[in-house]
Every structure is written in C-alpha cells, then in structure tokens.
Image (cartoon, rainbow, N blue to C red):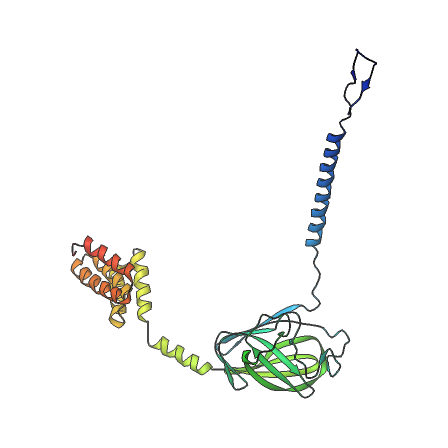
Length: 310
C-alpha cells in the first residue's frame, strides 16, 4: 500500500512518497510466527499419536494360592536368536540380573508367606536373581523403585533369599516367562524360564490358619460391630425400630462403645423411652470423656438438654 504524494507548491516541486513498510513488516512477521507455531503443534500432535510395540512387553500374573493373592508385574524380553544364560551370554553367569527387562520385576502378597524358610510379611518386593549354570540365587528385595538393578546393593533390603536348582527344558522359551504351577492349598511353585532354562521358587502360605480363623469368626455369630451396623441402617432408613433396638442392645451387651451407646440412646428416644435414653446417653458421654472424644461428649450433652436432663 502507498499514500498519496505530498507536493510543496512554495519551492521546487518535491514529491515525497511514503510506503507503509513498517506495518506490512510487522504483519508479515506475525503471520509467519503463527504459521510456524501451528506447524510445530501439528507435528507435535502427530508424534504424540504414534504408538509402537515395546521390545519387551509388560505382563501381569495374578494367582490365588490357598487364601492368599499373589500378583507379579514384569516385562518379557525375547531371545531373538541370542544366547541367554552363559558365561558370555546376554545374562552372564554369576551376575545380578533384573529378572526381566525395563523396571523392576515385582511380586506382591496380600498376606504373609514363607519363601526359602523366611517369612515374608505381606507387601511388595522386587525380584532379583543371579543365574548360574546349575542353580540361581533368588532375592526378594524391599526397594522396588529401580530402573534395573540397584546402583548400590544393600543387604539390609534383602527380605528373603534362596537357591533354586536349574531345570533344563527341551523346548526353548522365546520370551522370558513367570508363571505359577503345582498349586495346592498350602503353596505353589513360581516358575521363571527363558531359552532352555527354568527354575522353581516354592512359596508357602498358611491357609490352615486363615481357614480356621474364618471358621471361628463365622460360627461365633455376628460381632458387636455387625449388630451396630445393622441397627444403624434400620434407624437411619426408617425401618423397624424395635428390631434396631434389639440389635443395638446386643452390640452393647457384648462390647459397649461410646458411639454404640449413642446410637442406642437415639433409638430409645425415638421409641419414646426418654428415661432409658437419658441413662444410656450419660454412659456414652462418660466413655467418650475417657476416650478423649469431645465431639461425642458435645453430641450427648446436646441430646440430654433436649430431653430435659441438663
């Protein structure tokens, strides 16, 4: 764009022509920057959508053994024609191995178990191994946040350790595999295998203890907590108050608690028995004071005032 020329008539004619070059330049730069930004985001978005398979895909194995849940998370590298377990193999004999690929292989138990004669408390552990020609050393390590093997090995973090003899298999296993077999009510073998090598790690569970405890709990009948919850549901949902009262009485006869007595006093008041409600509320308040729970002290005080007892 150009402006109209300016002519000075009082002197030698001079024509001054001014182009809007600065404005045009700024506009051009703005447009160029916008184009570059859009191109960048378009390319970034394209790359964000690209997905390729992992060389060592992730896997999870969950197994119930007796009454214990066991969960393993690991990655599965492939042979790809390579020698795996050997002095000069991909996994050299006598060296600590992450037991898979990528981040730590982990195993988690929801109850205590026994491995290699050592009791492992319920929780999550990393599995590290040291493969050798005739046997593997297997370590259950408390630190599970490693990219591979720990930078600094700490024997204090070894929760359990055992030696597992090598089992040679005729058919080669292309991908590293962890599985459970030979499962009974009291234990199972965790097999780890790759190429033509496999080891078995025996894991024992105390199913009998769990089963007997469950039987005792069930045959002993409902607990005070069960009666309290049933009474609370009936009270808060407008159901049979007499039944709710029967249940809350059983709860407090077995094991009186300040919150249970509070519930009983409310049911008694709603049934029209304020004398009993006042007596029960006072018991609840005293227990709440002993327990240091001032919220329940205040709740009982408020009810006692409403019922004319304070």
